[in-house]
Length: 541
Image (cartoon, rainbow, N blue to C red; front, side, top):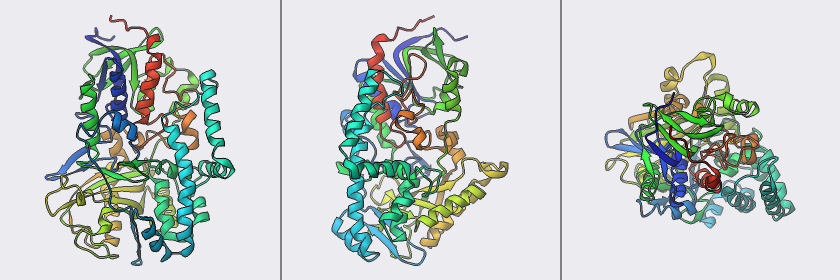
């Protein structure tokens, strides 16, 4: 039996990750009384910065800025609240085992000359590929802020579907064919069609497996690639940036914007129950037994942590509950931060001092076959002995993260099975898997292991425990065709409304999916405000 409510709000938001904060801001800006409840001691979810060794701090899970909406950045006035984003000076650096390397900048002419040394055909195809890709990305950007039409919905959904169909028609026949390819094919098939160089395909293919537990030859991986190229940083489309102070600087600025707008933020406030009465959500119960009443509740947590746990399955339509139970999660990600006494000195090109390639996204993915083998290895034995790795060294351009002369590096690594075969636990396997990652980097930069001062290693299980990422899934659910747009999270409930009146969803398990975008929170706030006049005030007893 729930305790007497001490307070009443217009909207209570479960989970203080970036989407929860964005949702809260827009609701408060519209004059609503909002409370954000976060189970941990800090807000930010997977978008946080922590000290992992004395003097060394870094982003914990998410690690780069690009997908975050410029509109949301501007409307929340995040720069005034302390957010400073810089664009990475270089784009990609990819070393190879045989001593070659690929270094791509943001200069088209320089990249063309670089690619010609790999393949003349690829140098020509590179610009054409991106031109075709940009056309699809422009369509995707237009869809980010839209509420997906619900299957079987009313006139509003029919009009939304018609508008989308018209946008697709404007792509023309060639663009429509490309769209079908990127939603139905594998990234490997598309990249093999366009390019000859294994190294270039390995670099471009990494976007297709970021947070995706599948091979670059798995159908649907092409969409994952598309999902990772729709962003921009500081007005430069397709660019990736860094938040000075780490990704926590984003959510710190968001929290300040929320509080300025009147949002109440509570940390160390886990929710144990959504209060349901007369078939609608009326508030929440906290871990200490306190209950908060509200006209509406918005959930920013993984759907399997909401439905069946905070909301009992017998309060849900049977088919909906079954679909949520079958929601596919698991990114295959192992995340690691390392403190370094010196910069990695790669065999190609060697440089102990800061060089151009140190400021790039460093990719150890020398071919699609390398990535595919890494996935097969993980499927068979639990993790890749030679994993695909994206490494950033943000201390090269952010002196706030490490002592002078020292550095931090973040490593985003694939593939590491969400559940290990043979009943093994990640608690037992974590160090061995982390060693495989360090050994792999040391193959390309021989001083890497010896320069390590400390490391923070997060297995899929650690990501779940620490950040409530079920299965270690950085997107709150895989980005498969059956879990996108009108089917995210369940066909018929893609409009941020749950089957229970007054209960909404505002997290990454809704459109447009994972990544630090802010769009799920933004879009959910809009839908809550549309319904608000129909929501009854909560009963306070």
